[in-house]
Length: 353
Image (cartoon, rainbow, N blue to C red; front, side, top):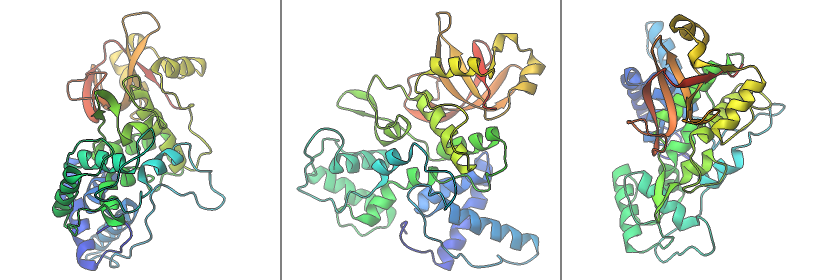
């Protein structure tokens, strides 16, 4: 199925069952919904509604209250009339998600920057059907498209149509859907839920023509920029905060969007939101650092911080995280969004409220 088609009862029931089966593998139900929605190319918001109906029906001793009734899914969050304006990341999301039209063999990009074929090749590589990213739709790219279509149960045309494009970009689409029922909740809670939604689809950078920090996820987080000089840990954290604030109906995020860790720290100090990690005792750290706050890693020089991420849970001596531009070894110039455990030494914390 793709984003433009409704779900049958059978497929809707299967999607709900997958969420309930996957729930224990994720830190929250919303993260499980996002993970399943990205695999089935459906709207996370719609799937979340189905799951809630199924749970209410089960609690009442019967089946689901209603069969799946799809609502039109959206590429990126759309504010209702009278709500907050579109978030600042909206045009960058659309630049990555808007359909390039039908793209097939013989098509070649012209001009500088990622063109239509280039974007297709990036998403093919991210989705496990890797091919050279050169902007030229030749036989290798066609074979990669056919491989992806075959694995997704799509017609094996070798051409990227709207349905194939929707399936290719499904992870970003569902990660950008707003956390449900976010209005009235604490910003730290919604930030963590939003971060876990991105984690569920494992955003990853690409290395293209010898340059790191490239690809659609990096451009989303860094407002269109990419390349070796664009480490994106702060861009990821800032994006998550902005997306959470938008889901809550706020006019803007509680902190300005920054792509430099030092600037985030300076702003937090100016607003009284900075917590010196060395000054916090073990019990005080647990008490004062809420899940959803930011952590920053100190560098070797004074007043230098080199990495930032989101606290998932604070403990007396260590804390769990969701962070971008890292990897399972904790490198500050990694390739993905992942969950880690970090010791408290050499870390400070930034509150959002």
